[in-house]
Image (cartoon, rainbow, N blue to C red):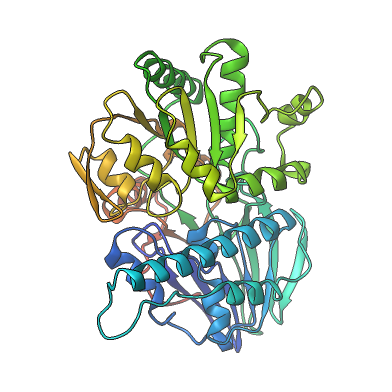
Length: 463
């Protein structure tokens, strides 16, 4: 018997987690963290909807927290199988999981100090020790387009998804002894035409497809226009003698923004006196990992590497230590601050928002997706006041939202990736239910493609 069930990103964006059952074998695709409002994030501590000890293997599409963030909890609750992924994803996942564990421990300590507890002290989902133990389960790295045997009756082929370094779509071949079928998981798909990574590999033939729908309702703005708007935001802020805060995802987005800042300063689109701070230990580590994995790069980026480091610029400062980060907040003007997290629900960016949101001279430039319930989404939606570290901060800074930098495919790119090959059914996941998900479903239904929006923990038999 072949059964598919979705245990995260079902009619919502975050928490990607998919289970394939093939007779008595069980394989998981991703095990991500739920992100957003406090209510949404409470789901992280809930049961998975399956027994972690029963999972034979976990296939990881990429290292973003909403796809890998609950793996240490899975191990803590009994998982002892192999974790199979690409070499770049394994390296990035190590950085992401250790960072997540450290932040959880820090938040738990802060909650205890502030006595924000009821019957029991605040406890992290998992600790640094749990995260380190999880790394022991990563198996030998898989290459793009290589087919690997996962377990009896299940093989997998990893395809370049072009989303972040090492990201993959995964094609499963399933055989339960009575029937055979193929199932393709898109993972998160990249937006074609970006400067560092290759475009996503087109979807191969598959009976079933599980596809993300983050931007299933609209096209993105053209990348050159988005770059020009970012340069405009920076010049306008510098003219007002303010700072620019860019909440940045540490993986891919930070490196891409550094690349464009380098070009902007080189070409005169950005004032030469600006100081650029990459204030994210995880993003700094990720940038170092990028340099070790040229197998993921677009050919044009390969060519640029022959003429120097496209991330480097004289005004760039890496700030790993907390003390260095704190010094940035004493800078009154002329700074471009890249800090995580991109959704502003954690990390150092909250400190920089606290010091700059209330200043009319400064700007906050959003260059990525902001999930419902996050601090980033409240600012984007125009909240006059937001709460940062238990303090109400007035939003007086100019807020820019530039969606052309998204690492997610837009609706035209999703449809182009899926192509016209016949499918038995397409399952839509990883999107806001009333926006990207329903809109993409309507387009596919109009084309005669059978679709379904799986519910969380809902078992679906594959015929």
